[in-house]
Image (cartoon, rainbow over all chains, first blue to last red; front, side, top):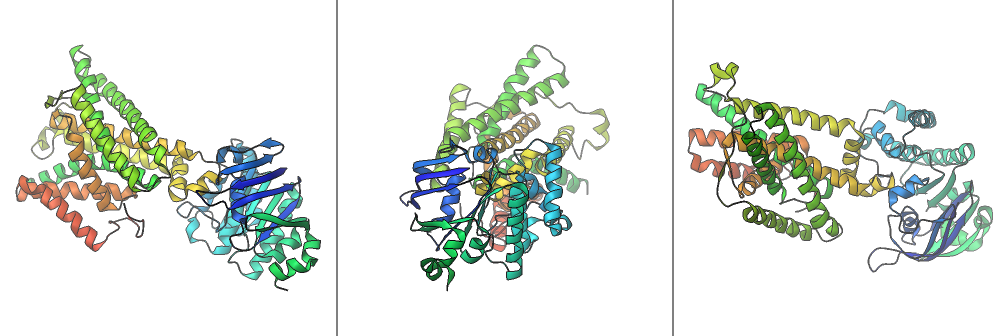
Length: 235
Length: 300
């Protein structure tokens, strides 16, 4: 689905990614874990075409997407739920979802996906005409995920979906991520500081440090790895 | 009492024209955080285009209604083309530059366009053909409100209504609001932000062109410098209402128009600007973000 080959990317003089290589197979859940500032968000932003790629290659379904405009990348089936959710605060919940389906023209399909996200998160149906900014943190996370799903992505990029949420809400969000993956065969690339939760639902994981991938393995092996435990799992 | 109502009506008319221009300032500011100082010139170009088209059509003896429609459409298209081009050559290359840079570029664009019209046309005041006739049904109230005031108010009201519907309900309108709130997120949902920004300049220019046509036929003369004064006033109105806010721009414009009109009527026309700008200073002291603006939008 996705391959990054020795990608260097960043703004100005700062290279947030100093040679990141990874691959994601169709239908997988892959977690990217690492400390603050290690380059997790930049990896996702480079895939979405927001952070410019300086060298190396990003391949989506075998085609290079280097230098492609962000809207073209969305059109190729990549949606992102960014860090901090970035809800359009002055747009209603419904309008936020409309924006998620911005590039789609198939009305019937859009309606179907709207029903799907409302079934996934019934609270959003209740809040439909409220402004996005009036929602609670958990509801905003649901809205942000739903907005991304409205594009009917093949690859869903999730940046810190658990950040700032109550434990119960975190569990619900991770359960739904798993469900989206299973029911729609949506490939998921998950960035998390909450490494424990992320690795529990992921198939494989990558560990990033100072803009470089330092370790990759099956998720259960990473969970059992003493170095990972010490550095990221707090065990 | 009649005098009061007369001043009130002429204040509303003035405010309506300011509003048509102020919307361009406030929409562009809302979306890219730039005070487009060349916007007044777009309005002036709208007035000049109207002048040329209307004069030519009058010479050929077209009926008045046809002249008004064709003039309006030509001015709107021509001004939009200028607005679009100004953004493309003067602001787009500076999208990631420090905020002061595009501001200077805007001032440069303003000076360039003024002098271009000065050289290409004339420095004299040109008589603008009378496009709005005195309506018979307005006769009983003609001492209070003129026909052209009525046309200006109605046209402005319709433009505002259409703009509101456009922003609220269309795909592009929603994309504009989304882009104004969070440009990166707009990119992430697949909005072509460059195109949305262009569209914003086009809509703003179109409204300014309508303003240019209306005011030119109301006052009856134009020259190359009218954009500067009108631009400063409309900018003041936009700041008064809270720059970035669309209802704020309309409210600020009406308040400014009324203030000027009453100052002219009850004090002296020499003092209209004093009152207008004193009001601005007062509001900025009491409510720095403007009447309907949000605090903390950063500095210009």
